[in-house]
Amino acid sequence: METLSPVRRKRAKPLPSVEIREMELRDVPVVFELGQKLFTAEEWPTLYRSWDDHELALLFSADAETCLVAEADGKIIGFALGRVTEKPRSAWRYGLLMWLGVDRRFKRSGIASRLVRQLTGLFIDRDARIMLVDTAAKNHAALAFFRRNGFGQEIRHVYLSQNLENDPRYIERNDDSEDDTDD
Ligand SMILES: CC(C)(COP(=O)(O)OP(=O)(O)OC[C@H]1O[C@@H](n2cnc3c(N)ncnc32)[C@H](O)[C@@H]1OP(=O)(O)O)[C@@H](O)C(=O)NCCC(=O)NCCS
Image (cartoon, rainbow, N blue to C red; front, side):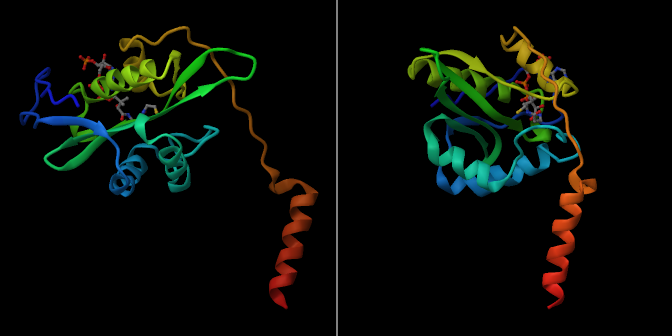
């Protein structure tokens, strides 16, 4: 695994040596906790997927080899979680970068770039021809990051929502369940 220490930008403290390695089962709770700090519900209100322990466990159990972490001084400070997939009616394989995050204290130190570079190599080893990412349009940091790291051909996608709480069926259902609990 890669063990370069990036010394790229001005920092108050020098960056410790950072190792990029495959994620292990024991890392799952730490990665989950770091993700909770980075992917808050307020900032990601419309994403069709949300950061939860179930999603993380599924991703890790489906393809642990394309889940990477960055570690410094024995602490996990970043992660890139992906998987390779095939689309229906397409002969191509795709590398999906599902979740990417770096501890805010280590921002702009080149850590996400290293994670993505290494993940890209793993996708290529698995015959992926295209790598896909998605993020909220207002996530300017992530967009700047992805553009800087070779992603383009941007397609905008609109999420719509409807509050179901005013639907009579919702109201009826919830009235019923309240009655049940009264018994
Ligand atoms: C987006 C994110 C992963 C970037 O991680 P990082 O380790 O800081 O990124 P790097 O240091 O490798 O940045 C490489 C380049 O990306 C661009 N970039 C990264 N963060 C940026 C920011 N906040 N504003 C503008 N450009 C930015 C810059 O071009 C940067 O190079 P530079 O520092 O020499 O200018 C990190 O900010 C993060 O964890 N964000 C929250 C989670 C998230 O949005 N994940 C992405 C969607 S899943």
